[in-house]
Length: 222
Image (cartoon, rainbow, N blue to C red; front, side, top):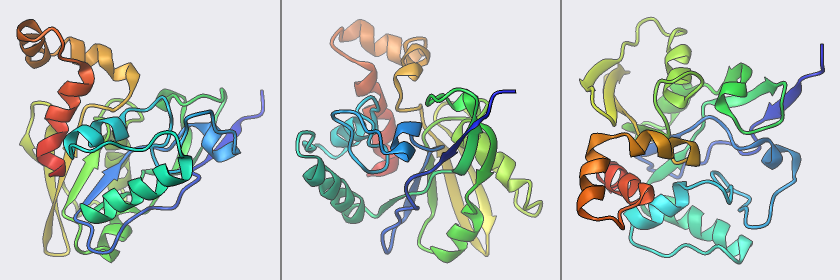
């Protein structure tokens, strides 16, 4: 049996004081853990040049984000999170892979971050924003597995259409979860099949999958 690659999350949770929302994904591509960043990568959460989260947030907040000066880009992203009281806390502390790639499906034997304990520590947080749904090895999927350690916590469905919304009680406070369409290129096909996207695209051929995500994300980030 080939030796598996141990994939560590390279960044600790980034949770500014007073944060009310947490972006929750899985973990960055392995190259971030290996220190092998590509040109255009930003050494920060969701910093992959191939990723789309920061492009989407730039549209949500109607700003231009630095992409050329990597150090300035990191500082700008941190300031944006602080200003809007948004934290980032991915689900996976480390996992194993047989193939060194960024596929969520390739994640094996994940060790989760203690999200519930983190929420108990950061009492201002009232919303978890999953960058993906309940498909295998997605952030919502992993969160549900993590909740099995807490049988007293139950997710209650609030909205079943995408983005799916749930809520749960924790220490006499209500926390909402929102499962957004993933900010990855691989999710573009799923968006293309959505009736809401098709209807807008028919009326406006210039409308893109990034535009659709901006429209979807905006109510939950603003």
